[in-house]
Structures are given as C-alpha cells and as structure tokens.
Amino acid sequence: GNLGGGGYMVIHLKDGTQTTIDYRETAPKAALKDMFIDSSGKFQPKLSQEGATSAGVPGSVAGLLHALEKYGSMKLADVIQPAINLAKDGFPLTYYTAKMFEGNLKEFKKYESSMKVFSKNGKPFEEGDIFKQSDLARSLELIKQKGLDGFYKGKTADLIVEQMKKMNGYISHEDLENYTVIEREPVKGSYKDFEIISMPPSSSGGIALIQMLNILENYEFNKDEWGSSDYYHKLVETMRYTYADRSKHLGDPAFYNVPQNWLISKEYAKEIFKNIKDRAAVSKEVNPGVPPKNESEETTHYSIADKYGNAVSVTTTINAGFGSSVVVDGAGFLLNNEMDDFSAQPGVPNMYGLLGSEANSIQPGKRMLSSMTPAIVLKDNKPFLVVGTPGGSTIITIVLQVIFNCIQFNMNLENAMDAPRIHHQWFPDEIQYERFAFPTDVKNNLVERGHKIGRQRGLGLVESIMIDQSSGVFYGVSDKRGAGLAEGF
Ligand code: GLY
Image (cartoon, rainbow, N blue to C red; front, side):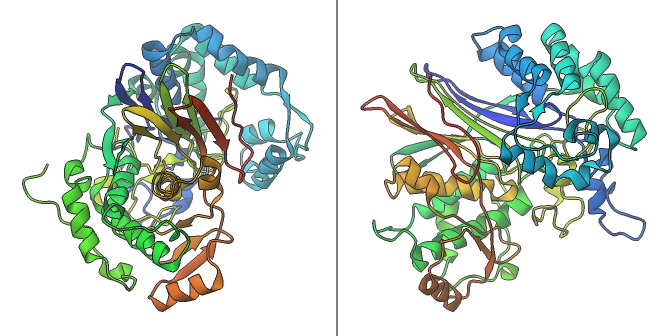
C-alpha cells in the first residue's frame, strides 16, 4: 500500500548501533508556500487533501532499498518476490479489507484509475473476492529488476508524471530523480531506568514522546492510580503543553532550526511541570515555550525483533487511509496526500486539526512535519519494547500511553495495548477518548477541574513486541482494534 508514500525506520542493532532512516515525502520543486490558499486568502483543504495536488514526492521505495542494501541480509529479488506474487496472483479479501475499500468508494469514483483497481467494474468488492493487481505487480517487477531506477526513472516515473499532468499535480521527473533518503541519529531520552530511542525531525514524534515522558517523570504515580481523574489530568496537561510546542518549534531541520536539545531536556520538562496546575489550563492561554537564545488516521506500523538482539520499528504512510485516493494509472499504486501535513496557513488546522507555523510552512524540497513515532525502549542497553501505531496527530500520545502503561504501571503488553486511550493536542481544546476510558465519576471530576470532554473515537492500531530479556520470551501483540497479526518464526 505504500509505494506512493513515505515513512521512518528506527533501528537498534545487536552490536549497539542505533540509527534511523527518514524516507518521508518531500514537497515538489514547483510547490509554493501559499499553493493551497485561494485569491481571497482562504485555505482550500480539497487541494491539500485530495487528488494529485495533495501528493508529495514518494520516499518509500528509496527508504526500503536503502535499509536492505545497508543493513539487510537478503537479496532484493528474494524479499520483493512474495509481494509480486500477491499482486499478480491475488489473495482473498477479508471482510475488513473489502469494507474498507467500499467505505472509500465515493472518493475512488472521482478517479477512473482508482476505480479500475479498487472496484469490480464499479461495484464494491466483497469478502472472499480474489484481489489481483497486475499493474502493481509490473511496478514491483521493475523495482526488482532495476532497483531505484525501476521506480524513480523509466516507465513508473513516466506514469507518475503523466498522472500529474492529467490532474494539475506538481511532481516532475526531476523531483523523482532527486529524491534522497536521510539517515539520522535517533532522538534519545530516558524514563527512570529505561532508554527510549525514536524518530527525530522531520517527524515530531520522537521529540514529543520524550518531552512528555520527561514531564511525567516529575510526578509520583501510585500503582492503583491508572484510570483515575487525577491520572488523566496529568496526562492531558502534559499533552497540551507538548503539542503547543510542536505547533511552533517543529519542522524539517534542513529548513528550520529545531531547538531539539532544549525540547527534550529534563530542565525544560521541569519548567512545564511547574506550570501545570490542579485545574485544567485553557489552551488559548497556553503558548509554545520560548527556547533560550543560545540554543540552536491511517498509517501502517510494524515492529520486528530477532533472537540476536536486533530490533526495528517502522511506521510508514500515505497519510489518509487511501492517501489522495488517486491510483497512478498503469502503475497500480496510490499516491499519498501528505502535502496536508504542512501548515498551509498559520492558525488554520489541517486534516487532523493540527496547527502549525513557519517551522512547517511549504517550501520546495522540504519534508512535511510528521507525527509518526516508531520507537524502541531499551533496558540495560537491550530492546525491551518495539512499538508504533497509525493515527495521524494521535500517534504520539498513543505510543506514549502504551509505553507508559508498561514502564510505569508494569502492565503486560496485552493489557497495556487493550487499555482505553485518550488524546489531547492543545487545539481543539478537548479530551478525545475511547469507549470505557471515562467512568461517570472520572468524567465528572475532569469536568469539575476544567477539562472539556470531546468526542469518543477509536485511537490507534498498535503493533508491538515486548521482550523479556531474562527468559528470552518475545511477546508480540497486534492491536485488537484492527486486523493486524503478531507472528513468530
Ligand atoms: N501523515 C501523518 C503523519 O505523518 O503524521
């Protein structure tokens, strides 16, 4: 699903090497800061969220090939063949997947190339139908034969650019040929005895996760506190302040000087902790912090660990469930709608309700800010948790809660993942929550303390592994909220 998208990989190798691969999409060279603003100055979300104008230059193929070449132990021809077979020979659709296609049919109907793939001559697929994708099989075959050039040059590149021309999109041959993967130092933090490594910018995920854990470390939590209004209050205020900082200080580091060291420092977390009161703050009155002058809903996650001590945490996305809903005609894959992750206009929310600023404005070649938070938690320098989730702006708070349930409340992984989740992102100033998160008295107590209770919704599809280093047992858990799989072999 992700050839037309991008992602991030966090890697811990058995020899202690830690690194990350940034294969996030970039803004095309022809992108303009106000490309989604009309002549009357109004933001046009249709342009940033739908169709070819919403697509950034895809990074997934470059990212996965880089990971394989530098860190892999198998040949490209062998690792790609199962995907080619699945595309060529097809597979029976599950009820869940058929319903997902059907749910997006209204969008697919706008694009002939998408209807060709995601419907049976205009009718919805049903459970048990064999889903074959011959164009996709050909695109994969080209990657198998030519590597990077099989996607970023030649036939597939031509098809992408043709699709852009037909639909007033921006991606050019030059954009595709110039796409580069960036290996970055992981962002690192700690919570008590645990070390956390995650994704630095161009994702906001790692910094925000560590910032929240740093704030929470200042509290005492008694072991029975989970689920109380006091527990939720601490969590929500921590999220509120962290997302305020996200809106101001995070963007692609090639274009914006992200004050990373300050944001993840224990000292700054203590300042925020001191500002948190017993009553809920009002988001309108909470501003992003000021760094000291001298300081510079539908993503996919998988977690992997092996018996040698290697661990990899990968989150990858085309943004919305079906990205821009545009299939590249003849190439058989969907294009992302990642341009909506930029801040098109200060103070105007994107698809996830997130606010941004200059740090995340649109510039040619820039990576749009992400919330993806692939993470690895280590204990005594060995992997303890490999974790991540889809969920747009809620990714960071979901990953936080799973980690926190394990390392602060000693839950086993299944309990930690089953537990209902909440989310707050500064604006909208409300707590979103899952079913069963708030018994009536908890809800009433929160309202009394000044919190606004927002909508009930599902939050995330976590895929995670917990490793008990003393027994050598690996616990793989796939979120019951979705249709993923935990597998050992
Ligand atoms: N497209 C969602 C994210 O990267 O945060």
